[in-house]
Length: 615
Image (cartoon, rainbow, N blue to C red; front, side):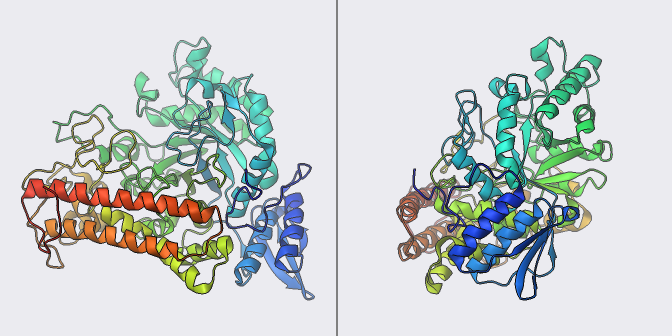
C-alpha cells in the first residue's frame, strides 16, 4: 500500500490519525495543526458550541481566525478552513449549516467481502463473513467522509444475505459496535440494512407486520442493537422487490410494514429508511400494458401521509434504475405529507463503472430544475468506495464522492465550482492544465451519453454486468426494460394515449413531456414512440441524430484522451487514469459501432455524412 493511501481533495492530510482521538474536536485539533503547518496558515482557535450541532462559523477576532461550531460542526469548519487555504478561496462567510440533516452513503458491501456493483475493489470493512478492517484505512475513510460532510454510513447491502443478517444478532453486535466506535470521532453514524423476514430465522412462523410475535421480535432486537450501538442512525429496508421479502406477502401495505419496524426502533431515536424500489421483475415482454417506471408511484402515492414520523421513504432520482438519462421520479413530487429521501448512485453501474469518466454534479444540478431541493428532507447515494489504494478505482471518481458531499450540504451549489475546487485541491496543476481537467469533468456526462444510449432510451447494456452495448440485451427479459425498436420506429409511448405514465406528473411537467414538440430531445424516446424519419427541431431526422451523436461522442472521447495526456498528474494517478481512458476509448467505439449498426439494420437509412456504419 502506498504511503499516501488516498489522494483525494485533502492530499496534505496524508498522515495517519492517532487512535487516541475520540471526539470530532480532537480530530479537528490534530487536522488543523497538521494542515495549517503544511499550508502556511494560522491555526484557528476552536470554540465549541453544542447548540450549533453540525453548523459552524469561521470568523476573525483581533486578527486571529476562530472556528465555532457544534460537536461535528467544529470538525466540518476545520476542513472548510483548510480547503479554503489550499484552494486560495475566500473563507465561507457567516454561519454554515447543511441543507439536509441526513447525508448518507448506502454501501452495497456483503459480509464475504464482495461488493455488489462495486468498481473499486473489495469491501473496506468486511471479509470472511463479518467485520475485518485495517484501522489505519478506516480512520482515513472517516477523514474522507467528514471532510465531504457525509454523516451516515449504511454498512451492508440492501439485498441482505444471510451472513449480513448476523450483524444485528448477538454474535455480530460486538463487531458492529467496534466499527461504530472507529468512525464516531468523525461524526459518522452507522446504519444497517435488515431483512424484513429475519424473525422467521428465529422460530417466528411469520414476518407479517401485524403479527404480535413478529413485532415483539423486532422490538427486542432493537433494544439489543441500540444497547450495543447507542448512536446507531437506524435501519434500511428493501422489501417486495427483486425477490426480497416484504409486507405484500401477507397482504399488507408498505406503510404497515414500514411502521411496524419504525415503532420498534422509535424508542431509541432510530430512523427507518424504507426503499421505494418496487416493480414486477417477472414481466412478460409480450405485455405492452404494464410499464415498469409507473410501479413506485402506484405503490406509494396512495400511501402519502400514512407513514410514521420516523419513516423516510427513499426514492431513486429516476423511475427506472440509475440509467444514463431519466426524468425525475414522479413519486418524489407526489407525497407532500411523507418524509422523502432522494437516492443517487455514485457507483457508476450504468455510467461507465468507474472506467469511463463521468462527473455527476452537473446531473444533480439539472435534476433540481424539476425537483425543488425542499421537496425531500434527506439524501442518500450508493457508494463508490472500495479497497483499492485510492478508494474509488478511477482516481477521478473521487470527484463524485466529494461532489456528493458538497451537493448534500448545498443542493444549489455550482457544479463547475465544485469540480474546479476538487481538481485544485487534489492535484494543484498549472492553471491551463487545471482548466483542461475541469473541462473534461464538465463535459464527461454529455460525452458518455452521446456514445451510449440515445435520447432517453434505457437498458441498452449487456445483461448482468451492465457494461458495454447490447441494444436488445434486455428486450425479451423479465425485467420490464424494453425499447420496442422495429423497422419503423423506436421508443415507448408513455403519454395519456399510451401507458399513461406521464399522467403521474404534476400539470407543468405533464405538459412538458406530453408532446414531442415540447419534450426535451434527450428524453424524447423515454416518453414517445418516434419514427426514424421524424424531423426534429434542428432539422435532422431522428435516425440522423442517433448517428451524429454516436460519432460525435467518440470524437469527444478522443479529445478527452488527448487532454488527459497533457496533464502533469502524479503517479500512480497518471498511469491509472491513462489505462482507464484507453479502456474508455475502446468502449466508446464499440458503443458507436454497435448502436449505429443496430439502427441502420432496422431502419435501412444511410448516414447523410457517409461515415462508416457496419452492415
